[in-house]
Image (tube, rainbow, N blue to C red; front, side, top):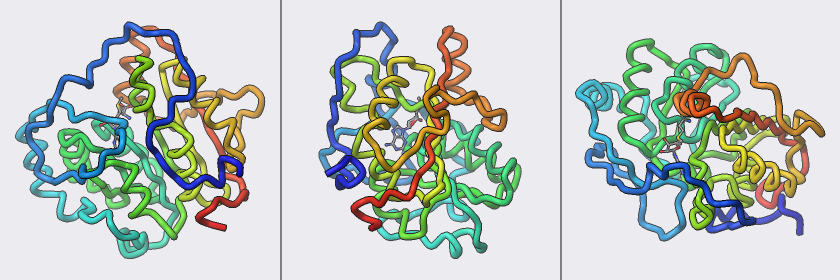
Length: 272
Ligand SMILES: C[S@@+](CC[C@H](N)C(=O)[O-])C[C@H]1O[C@@H](n2cnc3c(N)ncnc32)[C@H](O)[C@@H]1O
């Protein structure tokens, strides 16, 4: 059985060791103290995130109250109908882990002929993005406030995606935390199941060991072709807006890697 035919299982997947890192692990200490929208966290799967401290600003709170009913997706336990959701038929792109949402808001405004769904667990980020949606009246963008794994599994499909974007996912640099890295065989198989043939899986990272890890994971995936061919790392696309974590990485002197994979027509277990 090749990796493309494995059933999506995004549990622990420690692929290989990597020298220890002194990058500060900021995400570990913490709890989110204000959550107007409940998160589904009942199962015991290893997660790619921990709840982060962060009170909502007044503006974020107000944006959540004002705009969530119109732009938030409440239920992830049944497949979304994109035509009903957006009121039109257009290619749909998902961004996983949009952070503060500045980049996603910009991309949605730059590509008005596409529809976008952002998935994020961090409540202040959701509030911030809702504020931008309200300010700019971004009609081609919706938000899921939940873990991307169950959201993709349950809410996306059978209508396929045109793209999935994953920008600067938490690198979990310490070896004992590698099992938390969102890019693993199970996640990538899940992405393959949700993308249409020709659909694009675009990852960016500023953490070189994670870029290597991603390339190793993707090399085991017959469902994807690397758009950069043997060079492996794509030039940074002009159209990709700078993200907050990209700016931080650049400040720290890190190199940015864009990894762009195109879904081929190799079948997966779930879409054969
Ligand atoms: C390092 S930040 C990057 C944020 C943004 N993409 C950027 O480049 O500025 C990673 C983000 O992914 C989110 N995240 C991590 N795992 C997630 C998951 N399973 N589902 C949804 N969001 C997730 C975190 O809450 C965090 O906001």
